[in-house]
Length: 628
Image (tube, rainbow, N blue to C red; front, side):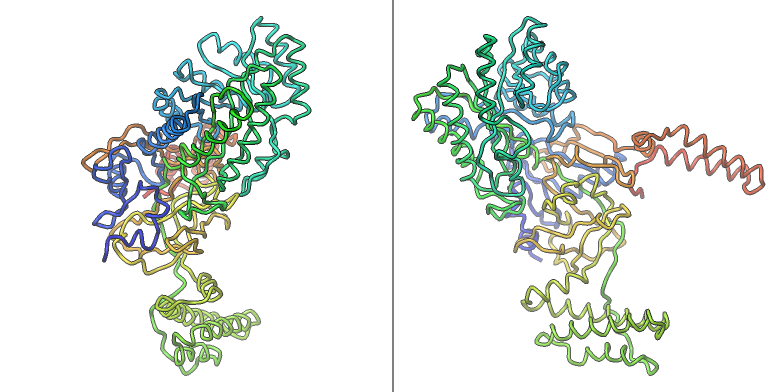
């Protein structure tokens, strides 16, 4: 088969951001975006190598060059726009730690971003402590957002003595009381920002993160009060930054322009009040095109990175020039745009539930008339009468089920009817693959899709898929040179009916089913879920007590190989038990006592007791996921 089936079916040339390819052997390959002449690295070969090292699926795979590339492209994008528009200020981006708080991610962002004086944004005391442990340059910003108590403010103010360029962003007028108190106690002036609510509301799923009904920020009347109070205390020179959050995952570039323009109006007005503002912080908003549609919708965006940078720089420049105000240093808090592409979840398929059968049933004389009617559909089944045949089959199947519920058919007759129906479904799918079918019929056939049971927890590793119907590209990472003959939905390892993925990004749009291959006993079958670097690691929960997966960070080598840079073992069962207030040692002690009672009652031998205790201890130390 042609090796481009992965692009033709799964659309990786549309959504793949040029980091994925299909290798001649059908494996999905990772492209080194920092060295595109290098040989792509096979994902299945990475998994095989990790397995030899004792690192099993499910595994979260981070690719260092993907993270580096996103960060470099963002900074270089603003650098180019500043040059092209003769902008007189600098770009000083910050990474919002909440988007991915993992130590390896934050460390590499700080390391790569050092050349650009790239900083961090924190929204809590724990995140502030993380930031204060990083080697940020003296010019890099440390933006403090969120609700802040006096301890938070004290740390932030004092950190400036260590060379951190820490700015406390006021989220409410009440925070000013705490700032005044701590500043007086320390006899130190802080660097302050003020978060102003914008009135323009973006479109898309995250619309409520913008506009004057957003959770954080100060309304314009309270902003004026804050300014007056600062002047009364002789601290107006502390206000160096205006923060105005544009929104999250903004799908439409015109929304970016409109919100930036409104933020500029506030900035120029505050400057007219004599405030020494230096920074215009435009918050988040840079989106990721998860589907490759390049459209302004919830899972896509209608702009590229260069256009985003140019839109901001151009809008700020013209607004400042019109007002006669010096160009401020532009700050953005791009999280998703920096880390989303860098990580992928890889897991194996444990089992399949098939809803069709290619085994043609024989006609029996003792068949119930409804079963004979069901079998009779084969006599007129054709492409032209496909919809009619599907309708008839569903009708007869439902009648047979009703007969069974009323006690008019026994279990063997019911089982035979289901076998006949599954055979018909296989014929329906065969005819449907040869013709173009209407949406209603396609939806009916989707209801007969297979279920591929994956070794992962949706709630732990892909919480946004469950909570907000976020689309992440999903595809097999092998056999991409073979036509996938089956369609399936993915079910996770939890015992929860919500633990499934049933929306997929394909070359021809979003589908309710994923094209997959027949599972064989000769090899493991792996699925990849891409662009999961933003939020998914920190939002996951312990549903069914499935913990964090194994995590590895790799660098791609020029010869098609890779280096393992960092490894974090997934949670053990003991660790997740401790997380929900069970002490593993206490559980083991209670189990031992029960086993001893069984030995005492002659219900178990001493050797059986030893074997059972060993199995219990092994499980406590083991992976929470399926282990081969």
